[in-house]
Amino acid sequence: MLKRSGCSPGLHQRLLLWLLILLGALWVVLWANHYGQAEKSARRDIDDRLRSAAMLIVQLHNGQSQKAIETSLPSPLPATAPSGSDDDRARLFPPAFELFDRSRQLIARSDNFPDTPMTDTAGFENRQIDGETWRLYTSLHAQGDLVLRVAFAHRAQEATSRILTRDFGSPLLWLLPGLALAALLSVWQGLAPLRRLTVRISRVDPEDPKPLAPAEREVPRELQPLVHTLDNLLTRMRNIYARQRAFTASAAHELRTPLAGCLAQLRLAQLAHDAPRRTRALERMRESLGHMTRLIRRMLLLARLDRSGEGIETQPVTLQALIQEVIDQHEQTATEAGVRFETRLPSETLTIDGEPALLNAMLTNLVDNALRVSPRDSSVVMTLETAAHDALLTLRDHGCGISPEERERVFDPFHQGNQGSDSGSGLGLTIAHAIVAAHQGSIDLDTVDGGGTVVRIRLPCHSASDE
Image 1 (cartoon, rainbow, N blue to C red):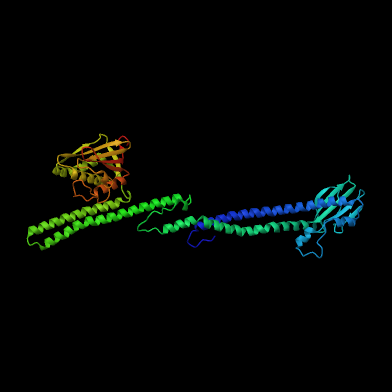
Image 2: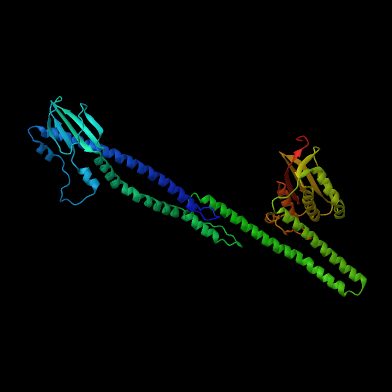
């Protein structure tokens, strides 16, 4: 099969090519075997005819003349018979014979018997006589009283072989194109489910990729794993597109509100006739711009983490030092909110491989959420311990907790829930979840008895003893 320039051969062409090679090899084997069998069959046919002719001549010898013996042997085609091929005529030509008595006196001899010396050895032999090969059969009868020699010219054997080859080889010649056509139809029909699957895939809407979901009976067993994999991939793509559209819509909504407020304050500042009013409008506009700046930074960070940790540069990070750093950053905010920090850290140093800035942002988002929802005179408790080969970081607040119906959506972008505060962006938990996933860890939230939320973070670590 020829392949187009610049393109690899298709699956149809590959299968058809290999199938034709196998069938062609099988045909060659059959033809070679048939040709050899035709030679053997022709040789056996000549030997059987020589042996039969010898037996017939001996039976007719007693009291009969040479003419009677000749007329009893197979005769050539009559002159009035329909014309046949040369092979047919050569094959039916009668054998040549000669018969001797005990004293080697000639009793009878056919006109076409070749002139060749006699031997005392019985059996079959080939002789070259006057440039032509003869098949000779010598038979001894009545304790050597009779010596009979029967001969066939080798062209009779060749004619028989050609007849057998013609009669049985012609079907093989027709079999070759038949096999090629059958191979083509088999490959085409066998790959029909793959073509139907290709058409079904080509009809998938890129904007709304839905699973193929074909009926089980329409898909061969070998293609079912591929179809299931494609369905899972299309389902994931559809969910990703849905999340992206929801994220874009939520981001536009979150940015529209502070932007509208910023434009309104700018208008007030332009219309203000006194400095205090203008200053107050500009200050509110600065707050709106700051809120939008923080929101955009978080969105950029989330977009960076959306590649499942690609591009993160890791280095050893001590978790005790990280927790203390975040507490120091929020000490003033906690004091103003009337909330105190409690830490329970192990004496053994726990170290993980991670990016310090991202880990700080993850813990900062969680502490910000805890401080916003915690009532005055309460505490935020952070516990660090080891579990197998992981570090388990637990953060608990004493807020209103998370309802079971919201627990499945807390990590969705811009989902703020109902925790008693609306000052957040709705991206804190989403960013924390993405950072933990980028560090090959896990995070989950739960509501505990007595009120409050517990955040459990599990990260792979190595202790000082491991090092």
